[in-house]
Length: 255
Figure 1: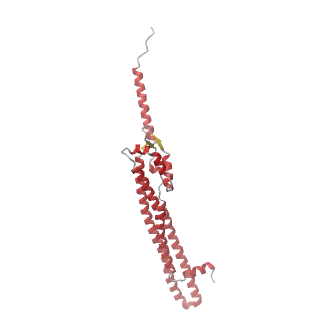
Figure 2: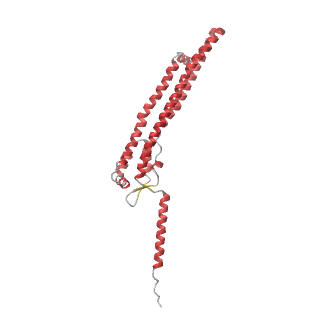
Figure 3: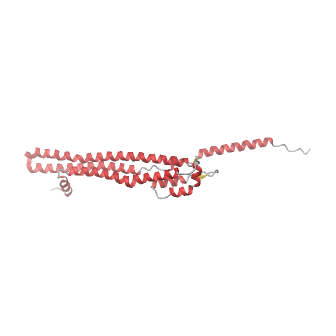
């Protein structure tokens, strides 16, 4: 008699095709994850990035910075709407760095890429599942080996020494088929990682385009640049004051 868990494992894996069916299920799970992630994560994020880039590309006129400043309330409303959490939080952080300039334009102390975190959620989801598929394949393989060993021991006990060779041959034949689940897990992991890499590159390309457009709509004014400009203004003021002091006429004498 075996414990209930061992008996269940032996019952499940006693069928010769059980491991192959489970291997097929692992591969089907990998394909399903690709379509599920593409429909619910990758496609919405890609469309959102394209809409944001199109919004900036459609600004009228040749002076993009002035057009962006004039249309900023409407642009802010659209970019602050419901979107991917990373893009929504990134825009909130970037908007907080914008300041009005004297020539009716907007300036930012940081680049857009520094305000937005990388939106690689779809790729990270597939990579997480890729690691899990390998673990699932290994667990099923070991469970199959446990079932095969249990059946072999039972056969040896029933048949004695005469049936030992037959039991060992059956053990090897059954155990060999169980490794198909590990192979399926590794193959599924490879496919998921390849798809994740491709989707990450696509998102990075769209992000770079959007960030470049956004940086082109504002004036980049880091603290160091502002400080240097202020020092230059102070130097000109000091020079002007020194020049006016030299040309100022002397006060008339009372003698």
